[in-house]
Length: 444
Image (cartoon, rainbow, N blue to C red; front, side, top):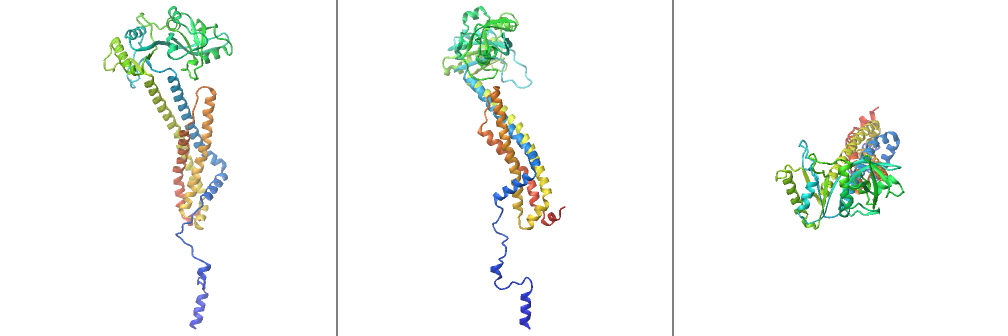
């Protein structure tokens, strides 16, 4: 009887026959198994491909953000490189004196624009160790040629200006001291300006009209490079006496002299630059009856190195500011990713429940949705990178500015877009991983 009962118990369901351990080994709950990353990527791409329109619209914010960051940083880098090239091309050991000051803050009174030719003469009388000094005064005007016209900068200066900035004539000649003393109505054109006005024809000997004054072209400068309005290739140069007296009316309020827009000085030795700057500053404070502590300065004395550093700082700050503004669109794109991923979690609730029911862990579900969010942002980043580089290339081809897409801007844009996808994808992924499998399977 005991034997029969024992045999019946052994035959009940759930009773393991002899050798069952070898046939049906128990599942290990604490094993190191998990999803294959390649499989996760495949599933993520399949999920995105199943909703192409929605995925494309989700990527759009990231595409615009990355394209904006890359394009604006390229423009900023190009502007900084152009400014650096132009200042370095002015020559070495240069000092610039111009009206106004760069040290006044918002709300302060504007400095009087009162540098004039008498200040220039006073500086010359100091006997400083200078290789040359050249005043400048100019404005923009419409230059009308027989077959074309161009709105450009007209700079009045003296012959030493050309030697100080290493400018030479490609055709014709430069004006001389005699032209300046006589106030001759002659001009020398930059290479690009000459081409815009006369095409492939000969500019030398032609007559143009500037501010209703007939001006004879006596020379064209050799190309210096650069396409901005501040480039010498885009400017016209005339004797300063003619520009001050006849073109733009630069006489001082007392009628005894002419205003000066800037003075360019070349030091004989770079070691003397600081001393020369200090001596000129003291002289101008005395002449303008200003305080010795520089608090009332209505002028600025700046060396080439200082000017380059100041302008580089300004362009760097501007580039960073523009990049930060463009980065806001990336954040907006990240919010769009989070929104779509939350919708995806809701749509795939039963799928999540089924996966959990067959053994998927919360970490597997989390990884799946995080990868999908990162794939969206990374693909959008790559497309945006292409658009940003295209915009920068078109700007360069237009001749407005030579842009520069740096490796740093590429890494920054792609890294930030990926980080945005990761950050905004974690919350939807966490919601998916935290779903109860029973409730998920019951979800309609």
